Length: 187
Image (cartoon, rainbow, N blue to C red):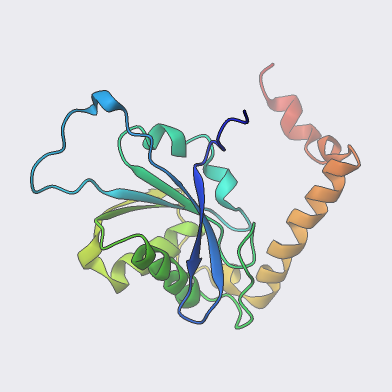
């Protein structure tokens, strides 16, 4: 029997304009976590990856969080298994997509975790509907004023670079690109 994927069960989330986002839900709370507190709904933790990163970037963190909360990762539009957004990627559209994902998984409460360019996205989504957000965790967040991250050229590069990395990996050459980093890493 194949063990379950470490990031949980797949879910398809519809957006307000008819696209679909791919999410993975992991809710493996330990049985010894104790009984639920009456009147208190435990938060759902939703992870937002950095630029050009998909749900897999949270694979090392999500299972640890799932020990005490439902933990959800997803692929932003055009990344991983999610459909692209023909209207383009702006901060507002990415925050709307995250809002659609939150709507799909219930009223909350939610804790949003954003890394790098995911920081502005979770802050914007939280500002749009603060009633359902109980906390934000920002990991090296980017500033919303960093317009370069939301420019057409940068979005183009965020689609091209992962493909290039994939090609280098298939050819067995990716290590050459990262040789300086690998040399600096401990054995």
